[in-house]
Amino acid sequence: MIRRWYPWLMVLVAMVLLAACGGRTETPASPLATQSPLTAPSPLPTPAADGATLLQERCTACHTLDRVESARKTAEEWERTVVRMIGRGAKLTEAERAVLVEYLAEHYR
Image (tube, rainbow, N blue to C red; front, side, top):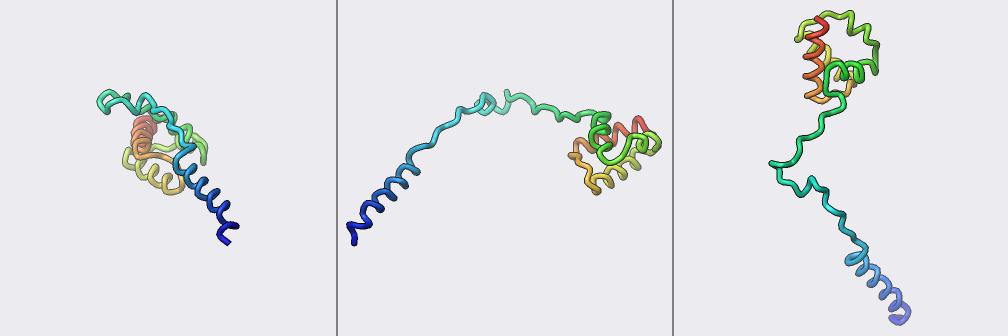
């Protein structure tokens, strides 16, 4: 009985050893990974870093700019509006929200 299973057992042991020891390659570290935190470059700005771009890219996904351009609101009213739109699915980070509200309050008051 042992003679029948012995070859399969050896194959299984060899597969386990190969999986544990071989086949793993190291990927070269990126140049940024080797820099110290003090010399690392600052993160790249998001593509939509300014209010006008955010307004065009994010707000017009659901409605036209006419709706925004015809509105006249205070900064607090724009804040409430933008928070409400985020609640309805607008995709904005906290930083983008702040930039957009500032832009809207400055240009559409």
